[in-house]
Length: 506
Ligand code: NAD
Image (cartoon, rainbow, N blue to C red; front, top):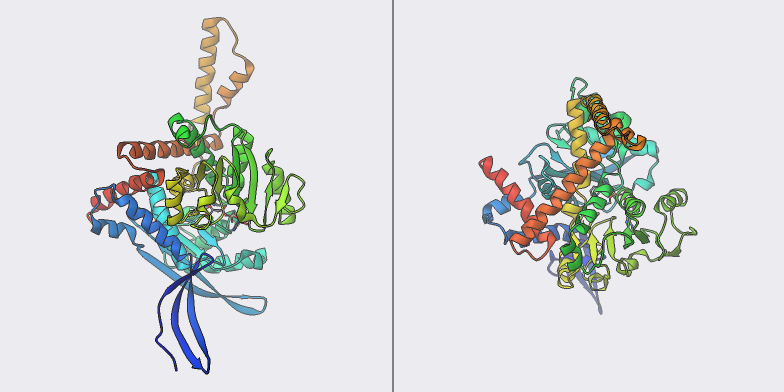
């Protein structure tokens, strides 16, 4: 005898699922419950993002109707497609979400992750909208995902799957240089982007701007030197910007600058590896803990990140690495005693269950959405400073923007002016030497005449965008008496988006 069915949302291990058609049957003494449900993975992520949005709204003059227009995702395309592999047709599910089109193209990465879901993609697309607004790149927000564990497939198989997925998106203009430009994210990299670009070129062989349909490509395929390091590099630059403001680091409980700070990093993938490497090598920080999905490695004197990455690539784990102590239960170390915590893996890793235990003075969200809304409230109350994802990891889209422009201009940055600048510097040096009667030291001469390479220009542009973003958000925090950087960052983003919606008359 079935009882009434419910449509409640339940939460378990960071996954949400909606109950559908729950049926209770009485059978003598026992009640048997048949449960049919759909997994709504990370539904909390979208909820958290919207709550953070609403919190910042109170500091703006934006009307509720415009706010709704900005908050909701414009469209999400779901696709199920088949690929014949290993003598069998395998059906894959993917999404491409366009959160906003107040600027086009819409921009955002594509991730390959078995836990991906529509809600997650929509939350990530929303973050892209806010991120692009903060660093002032003329893009709407988008994101895509394929529900797949890349480790289950060989490289040629991933290529075949990627090409099929790309075809489906391209024919709907969900990959297009003027409308929607993907980039790498979790589980994807330069190879996937190269296959996507190649598929686009096959479908539109006469489009002279075909290469601009995707960013994060390999350098020999229209990619930009510095794109793969960009997000991690941006994390380094925003941390530097924070430590350039004495008032801010003192408020967070630090006594001095960045040198020798103890850092814990979660995720030694693209973003985590580059951020940790640069902070260790260039800012002399001590990376005391690195957490991965299959274990953590700890060393209070600091780890050599380059050597650790090499070990991880060879062995697939930190286990057995002599650099430090290996611990199996990696997520426990999010609460390790450190100065700076950099979650650079996945969303929702800091929630109500562990927020109270966090010991870091500063959390830098290199990953998207690593802190849930509830955890954010706890951390704010504990005065733990957070540099939010929509600022901290914007370096990826900043350099993607440079790559897209370079593909549209068809000429590398600095090409026209490099020689001219060299002649000018040469003349200047000769003039100084003639006037002073002294020779300029060879070291400085070479640096002047050599001029800036493309990578120097990219890093300089990125540094400028990250530090300007930090300063603008900080200014908004002070001027509007906003309690934390995240709310201030959302306010800066929302105000900018509202202006552009207003100006297009919506
Ligand atoms: P990646 O796939 O290169 O790296 C992710 C790493 O995290 C992997 O090494 C993985 O093993 C590890 N990981 C997964 N689950 C973990 C867990 N539970 N505990 C510890 N480690 C775990 O991905 P990525 O490109 O470095 O992206 C990481 C985060 O940064 C994501 O949130 C992504 O959305 C965000 N992000 C990436 C970029 C980019 O340019 N790649 C840009 C902006 C934001």
